[in-house]
Length: 267
Image 1 (cartoon, helix red, strand yellow):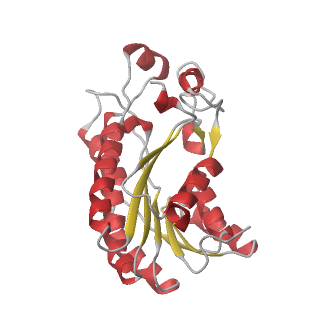
Image 2 (tube, one colour; image 1 turned 90 degrees about the vertical axis):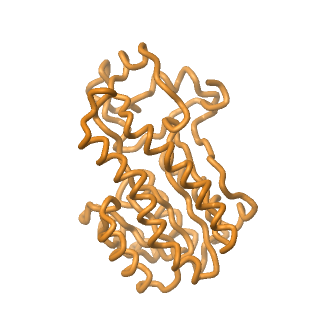
């Protein structure tokens, strides 16, 4: 296997589980020095130890993406561990638990803050380090929610659609385009990904008609719309992120890339 990230330092937010954990492992396998950032310290340290036990290089730094002071402190620590910063995967985020118009102002603000604002906080803190490094690559995490809606029948089947999450992910895509434009002056590429039916711990909590979980929360909807049979897995997304941060994608920036089994091509 050709190491695509040798000599690079990569930051992965939400690197303690799911897509973030899988991506952190893959980056390390390709020679990157990996900084794992998350709120859950015990899980983050476990990922760090797992990577290092397999011959990789990684360090866990506790960080709350929704707290700008925590972000600034963590990024400064990260820049001192391996030196330059070349890669950022803004993966951290979460959904909400209430529909419009019943969602509370508190939930709206929390979801917007941890998803959209968090992507801004981390990118802003990393940016000068990446400029100093001579450039780099950033991948932001969006969702099909940024470009798709819900019908009354779908709401009856699946329940909560969390307007705050939809708005946050749409905002991340707009931010991605703006960052990419500015990044062109500094050799920094910025892209965004939209996962579909990807099995992760946070996406298998069950539905109204499947309360025990074990399947993607929108499994039946995706299965009807996908061209490629699902589900997808965290490693599928990690492989896409690796491509987008490596020189294999040197001519790609400001793109929103779907990884959904072909759903977006049909609906």
